[in-house]
Length: 123
Image (cartoon, rainbow, N blue to C red; front, side, top):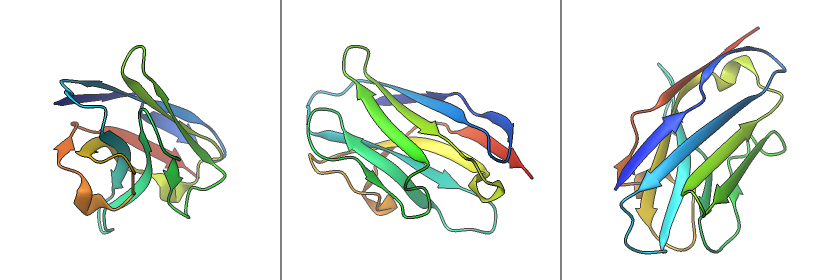
Protein backbone atom coordinates (compact mmCIF):
# COMPACT_ATOMS: atom_id res chain seq x y z
CA UNK A 1 0.00 0.00 0.00
CA UNK A 2 1.39 3.38 -0.97
CA UNK A 3 -0.07 6.79 -0.22
CA UNK A 4 1.33 9.99 -1.72
CA UNK A 5 0.11 13.41 -0.61
CA UNK A 6 0.36 16.74 -2.36
CA UNK A 7 -1.12 20.21 -2.19
CA UNK A 8 0.08 21.69 1.08
CA UNK A 9 1.43 25.22 1.34
CA UNK A 10 1.21 28.60 2.99
CA UNK A 11 -2.09 30.47 3.03
CA UNK A 12 -3.58 33.38 4.93
CA UNK A 13 -6.37 32.88 7.42
CA UNK A 14 -9.68 32.60 5.61
CA UNK A 15 -8.05 31.10 2.55
CA UNK A 16 -8.37 27.65 0.99
CA UNK A 17 -6.16 24.73 0.08
CA UNK A 18 -6.72 21.45 -1.73
CA UNK A 19 -4.88 18.34 -0.59
CA UNK A 20 -4.68 15.22 -2.74
CA UNK A 21 -3.76 11.65 -1.86
CA UNK A 22 -3.03 9.10 -4.54
CA UNK A 23 -3.43 5.55 -3.27
CA UNK A 24 -1.97 2.42 -4.82
CA UNK A 25 -1.49 -1.20 -3.90
CA UNK A 26 -4.93 -1.82 -2.44
CA UNK A 27 -6.21 -5.33 -3.05
CA UNK A 28 -9.63 -4.83 -1.47
CA UNK A 29 -12.38 -2.25 -1.71
CA UNK A 30 -12.71 -2.41 2.06
CA UNK A 31 -10.04 0.17 2.74
CA UNK A 32 -10.95 3.49 4.27
CA UNK A 33 -8.73 6.52 3.77
CA UNK A 34 -8.41 9.47 6.07
CA UNK A 35 -6.51 12.65 6.69
CA UNK A 36 -4.68 12.94 9.98
CA UNK A 37 -2.85 16.05 11.11
CA UNK A 38 -0.01 16.52 13.52
CA UNK A 39 1.39 19.72 14.98
CA UNK A 40 4.13 20.30 17.58
CA UNK A 41 2.75 20.29 21.10
CA UNK A 42 -0.61 18.91 20.06
CA UNK A 43 -2.02 15.40 19.81
CA UNK A 44 -2.51 13.90 16.40
CA UNK A 45 -6.02 14.57 15.19
CA UNK A 46 -8.13 12.66 12.73
CA UNK A 47 -9.55 15.32 10.43
CA UNK A 48 -11.70 13.43 7.96
CA UNK A 49 -12.15 10.03 6.34
CA UNK A 50 -13.99 8.26 3.59
CA UNK A 51 -14.43 4.77 2.28
CA UNK A 52 -13.75 4.84 -1.42
CA UNK A 53 -16.73 2.71 -2.35
CA UNK A 54 -19.31 3.05 0.40
CA UNK A 55 -20.24 4.86 3.57
CA UNK A 56 -20.61 8.38 4.79
CA UNK A 57 -17.62 10.70 5.05
CA UNK A 58 -16.76 11.73 8.57
CA UNK A 59 -15.23 14.88 9.98
CA UNK A 60 -13.72 16.05 13.22
CA UNK A 61 -15.88 18.69 14.94
CA UNK A 62 -13.07 21.20 14.51
CA UNK A 63 -13.38 21.12 10.71
CA UNK A 64 -17.06 20.43 10.09
CA UNK A 65 -18.54 22.89 7.66
CA UNK A 66 -15.09 23.99 6.45
CA UNK A 67 -13.46 20.83 5.06
CA UNK A 68 -14.84 18.46 2.44
CA UNK A 69 -13.43 15.06 1.55
CA UNK A 70 -14.12 13.22 -1.69
CA UNK A 71 -12.94 10.14 -3.51
CA UNK A 72 -12.28 9.66 -7.21
CA UNK A 73 -12.21 5.94 -7.92
CA UNK A 74 -11.08 6.39 -11.51
CA UNK A 75 -7.67 7.58 -10.46
CA UNK A 76 -7.54 6.29 -6.87
CA UNK A 77 -7.39 9.79 -5.44
CA UNK A 78 -8.84 11.18 -2.24
CA UNK A 79 -9.13 14.96 -2.07
CA UNK A 80 -9.54 17.20 0.96
CA UNK A 81 -10.83 20.69 0.23
CA UNK A 82 -10.08 23.04 3.12
CA UNK A 83 -11.94 26.34 3.23
CA UNK A 84 -11.93 29.18 5.72
CA UNK A 85 -8.61 28.05 7.10
CA UNK A 86 -7.52 29.16 10.54
CA UNK A 87 -4.07 29.45 12.13
CA UNK A 88 -4.92 26.46 14.33
CA UNK A 89 -5.22 24.34 11.19
CA UNK A 90 -1.46 24.65 10.76
CA UNK A 91 -0.01 21.13 10.83
CA UNK A 92 1.50 18.36 8.80
CA UNK A 93 -1.34 16.54 7.10
CA UNK A 94 -0.98 12.82 6.50
CA UNK A 95 -3.01 10.61 4.26
CA UNK A 96 -3.57 7.26 5.96
CA UNK A 97 -5.54 4.07 5.39
CA UNK A 98 -6.86 1.00 7.15
CA UNK A 99 -8.93 -2.05 6.32
CA UNK A 100 -12.57 -1.22 7.08
CA UNK A 101 -15.72 -0.29 5.18
CA UNK A 102 -16.93 2.19 7.77
CA UNK A 103 -14.41 4.92 8.21
CA UNK A 104 -13.65 6.68 11.45
CA UNK A 105 -11.37 9.57 12.42
CA UNK A 106 -9.81 7.56 15.23
CA UNK A 107 -6.09 7.81 14.50
CA UNK A 108 -5.39 4.46 16.19
CA UNK A 109 -7.10 2.61 13.35
CA UNK A 110 -4.73 3.72 10.63
CA UNK A 111 -1.91 1.38 9.67
CA UNK A 112 -0.69 2.75 6.33
CA UNK A 113 0.65 6.28 6.15
CA UNK A 114 1.93 8.71 3.58
CA UNK A 115 4.89 11.03 4.13
CA UNK A 116 2.77 14.08 4.91
CA UNK A 117 2.37 17.56 3.47
CA UNK A 118 2.77 20.78 5.40
CA UNK A 119 -0.09 23.25 5.74
CA UNK A 120 0.68 26.64 7.27
CA UNK A 121 -2.01 29.23 7.90
CA UNK A 122 -0.85 32.73 8.77
CA UNK A 123 -2.96 35.13 10.81
